[in-house]
Image (cartoon, rainbow, N blue to C red; front, top):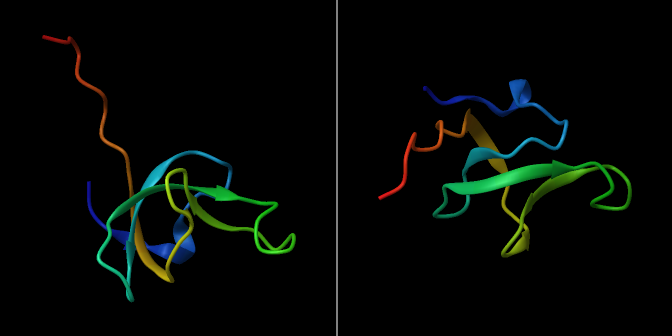
Length: 67
């Protein structure tokens, strides 16, 4: 996994990791197409609207087993 430009991020509601220029991040977020007055925007389920994103990467695969 490597950081990719935000312009290439999926905007289909899938969760991903986001890095922001103006905040501490990273955040696990999803793109909410109804956010920001219908324009759409990145949302964090815990904090709501977040920063100005610059890069993203997919979430890692979950563990195969739990201990």
